[in-house]
Amino acid sequence: MASLVLLDGGAATPKSPRVLFVALVDYLGMERVPAAMGALGADCAVLSPPGFCGLSSRHVKQWYRLPAHRGLWLGLAFLRRRLEEAVAGWQPDLVIPLDDIAAQYLRVLAKSARLPASLRDLLERSFGDPAGYAAVCSRLATMQAARAAGIHTPHFFASRNPVEIVAHAVGWGFPVVLKGENSCGGDGVAIARDARELRSALARYHGGPAWKQSRRAAVRVFWNAAGLSETAGAPALLQSLVPGVPAMHTVAAWRGEILDGVSFVTEQVHPAPTGPSTIVRQIENAEMAEAVRRFVFSQKCSGLLSFDFMLDETTGEAALIEINARPIGTTHLGRHFGHDPFAALLARLGHLPLHQVPSMAPETRSVALFPKELIRAPEKPERLSFQGVLHDVPYDDPPMFAMHLARLRRLHPAAFPHIEQSLRAERTEAKLMETIGFAELRPRADCRVTGRPVMG
Image 1 (cartoon, rainbow, N blue to C red):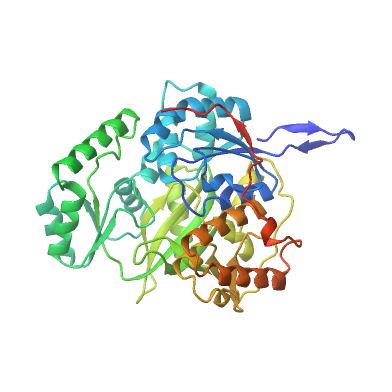
Image 2: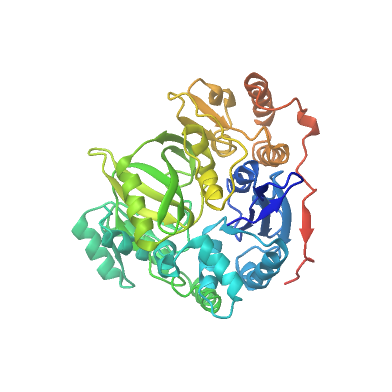
C-alpha cells in the first residue's frame, strides 16, 4: 500500500506510488507504459541501458543505468546488482518489466534465496504467487496451464525429436506454427504449410553451421548461469494454426483477481505475417475475458499481463496461443474505451488517479499505433486522420514525440516532409496540445541519471 503523507491541513492523503520499470530489450511502444502511469500520478523510474525508448517520456523522473549492449548478456550480468541499487534508492511500490526477458529474469530473481528478503517481497507483490511464474514465462508451460484450467487452446507439442514433431503436425493437418522460446513480436516464429517447410524451420532452430551451433550452446550456458534454465535451450513449441484473426486481452491483476482489462483485434501488422500490430480495433469478447480470468485465478498472478488469442474466422471461438508476462504497447489505449488497467493497478496500491480520460464515441474503435503504422506505410499519412480512426500520437509528451519524429526521419527521409506536414495538420485540427513548434521539439536530456556508466 502506498504510504501516506500529512499535508498542512493535517489530512492524510495518499502519496504518489513509485514504479520502477525494467528493460533489457528496447521494444518500440513500451515507452507508452511509464508515460501512461506517470500521467495518472505515479512517480516513474527506469532501469535500462542508454537510449532505450522507455526513457523518452517526460514522466520518467529517474534513470538507473545498465551498460549499453548489443546482446542481452551484459545487461543480464549487471541487472541484479543494479536492481538492488535502484530499489534501495527509489524505494518503489511496484516493479514492472518492459520486455519478455526482463519479465522472466525478474521472476527468477523473486525466487532466489540469495536476494534480500525485502526485494523478494517487492517482486512477489509485483508479480503474484511464485508458483505461477513458469506458466506465464514459458510457452509450453502456458499451454499446459491453460489446458488444465479448461481454456481453449490449439493443439500443441514440444520435443527435440524432429520425427515426432513432423508426425504430430501431419496428424493435426497443416499449416502449423513453430515458436521458439524467448522470442516475441513474430521473431522466432515460423508458419509451415507442409512437412518440407516444417523440417526447414526445425533445421534453422536446432541446426545450422558449426559456428551457429557453438554460439547457441554458449548462449545456453550463459542463460543457465543467469537462472533462465527453464527456457534456455528449450525445444520449440509446435502449435496447430487456428485460422482467424489475432486478438489480445491486456489486464491488470492482483493476487489472482482481474482489476480491469481491455481487448483488441489486430487489423494490420508489420512485418507480415507474424509481426507486431500497427493498427488495432477495440472489441468486447466475453470468452477471452473469461479465459484470462481463469488463468490469472489459477496462477494467482499480479501485475500487468497480456494474453494473445486467435479468433476463429468461422465460429468466432477464442483460442489462447501465448502470454506476455508484461504490459504491451496497446495497454494504455483502454482508457479511450472505458477501461484503464493502469489506473486500476494504481488504485489497488492505494492511489486514486488524478483524472480519467473520457470514453470515445462507440464508433471510434480502430487505433493506428504511432509511429508503427507510419513506419510500415509512410505514404499518404493523412489517411490516419479519417473519421472513426484514432491516430495515437503522443502530442502531450513532446520529448517522446520528438524521439519518434527522429526515428521516422531516419527511416523514411523522402516521405518525412509529407509525414511532418500531415502530423502538424492533425495536431492543429484535434487541438490535443498547447502550441509548440516542430522545430522546437528535441528528444529529452533532462532525466536524472543515477549510477556511473558500467564498462563491460
